[in-house]
Length: 307
Picture 1 (cartoon, one colour):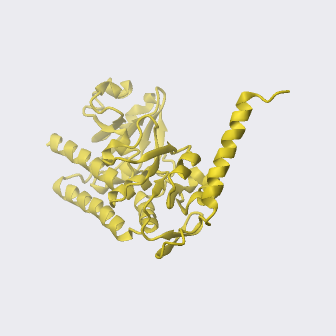
Picture 2 (cartoon, rainbow, N blue to C red; picture 1 turned 120 degrees about the vertical axis):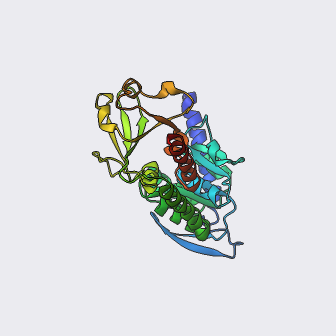
Picture 3 (cartoon, helix red, strand yellow; picture 1 turned 60 degrees about the vertical axis):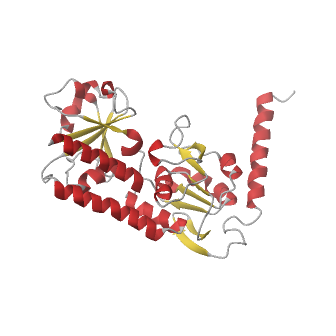
C-alpha cells in the first residue's frame, strides 16, 4: 500500500528537524563555542550549565525572560510569544525579535535556525524539551513562572552575565513602589485585580502574582481568598460580590473598550462604583522590570484621577 502523503510529510519534517538539531549539537552545545574565552557556570532548575559571559544571540521562551533581557539592554534574536498573531508585546519597545512559536509550544526548528548562544526557558513549561534545546545551545531554566518574579529575574540576570544590571532594574521598581506608597495614604485600602476568563469564570489575582505583588508593594492590601499557591482564585460571576474592594482593576485587551467589563461587574455599580481597565499584556503577561514599571504607571494614573 502506498504511503499516505501526510505520513511522508511528517517523516520529512521530523528528519529535517533532526538534521538541524544534530548540526547544532556538533560542538557540545552544553558549553559555549570554544572561541569564547570568558564563561561562567549557572546553577538552575536542570542542573549546572556553562554559558558565555556576554551572550549575543539569546532566545527566550518565557515572557519574564524576554522582559528582563530587554530591561538590561539585550534584544533577544528570538522569543516564544503568548500569541503568534500579536507577536512580541509592544510595551517592550523593541524590534527585530523573531517569534519562535508560543510560550506553551516553542518551535524547535525556528529556534535552531537562529543559531542562539543561550536559550532561556522554564522547567514547568518546557521540561520535555530540555535535551533538544541543550543540543542547540546552552540552556538555562527557571523552575516555574509561578515563583516570585524578582527571584526568577535574578537567575536570568546571572545567565545573561548582567546580574548587577538586573538588580538595579528590580531595585528601581521597589524604589518607585516606595515613592508611590509615601505619596498616597493606602494603609487599610484594598485592591482587587480581576481577569475575565470566559462567561463563567473570573480569576482574582493574589499577593504572590506579578501584578498582585505590585499592588501590595505600593501599600494596598489584597483581600484573602482561597488562593491556589497564592497566585489566583477563580470565582463565578454569581459570586462577584466577594471581589469588591476600594480599587478594582479589570484586565482587557483594549483598555478603551468599556464593554469588556464583565456584565456581573458593570451591572452592579453599587458594589463596583469605579472600575479601572488595565492591559492584560502588562498586568498578566508583562512579568519583569519593564512590565512592572508599566503596571506602576497605571496605578499612579488611577491614584491621581481618584484625588
